Length: 419
Image 1 (tube, rainbow, N blue to C red):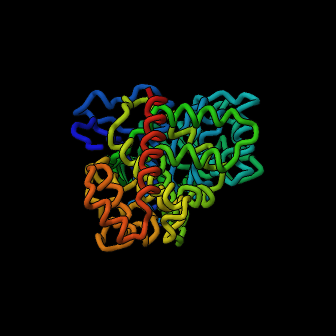
Image 2: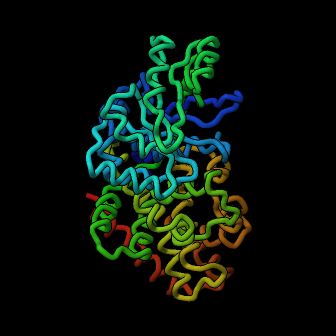
């Protein structure tokens, strides 16, 4: 199979980060915000739910390149997303869930907030002004965020006073702080954190993501309806989509997880993150992708075919140097350099892959690279090289022909479903 013309398989996303400081002048955390690209109106997102999800998925993983493990990450979720449980897709050790100040404290909302608190999440109520409605949420939040711009010290003091008398100490974060004098006055009032143009304006970040395929989104949503969801089911869905695999690997490379192990397969990655958090994270990824225009790119098909081909050879005992799951991951990601239009070395730095997989992309003499060379020879109908590689690797040519036929048929089945 020779690919000639291809549609773009990646899309840009934009977020902004703004630091939050404590009373010692050190960075306590950052707020991540959706940021549109003013030069390209086609990437503008007007739906608040989608904007929040883009920040919580693509923005979160991209920001990890700059992240210090001890710093918090504040992300605002809409009421719909909070009720849906989306915040659970982020690790509680680092995520601060921002609750819109205008939200109504309904019984379902309070139940979800109570559960999030029990699970270890930090909750912050934004645009807090001390209304009776907002105060009904004080039992569940750890931080109130007060916009101090245009307010007198007396007004701010009265707002801060509304948090007194609670059984716990509620931290106060001053937003839109504009000068040093304000910092000193706010500190005297008992303020804990500060954010605003006096310290730093939001810094815009741009990243690239592969686009999830339509069938993957459908299969994930369908799987969520299964009462007894199994790891094996989710593993097969993720394996079939390079975009979701790539995003999962980036997520697990975050400093917040601190994993020292190198990932060898999709199933290995899922076991590390855990099924519960994975389900919520996947739901966010699928919903965030609704803003994009997804097509069925040829590079995806080719990557899936390679992965399936190598996996089948391993399952049939023709390849004994690695397990089938590892070879599938290796083959599927072999075209990621072309998919993202980025240097392979830069991509490999972002992904916590095993040494054998990375070396397979770097060293043409490595055993993994030779397996890949065999797959490429088949794609190019290079019969001489196929014979040479089979002889060199000790692989039966009939098994190669069968694995090639089966992998192409499987990939084509997937493609027809994507339509």
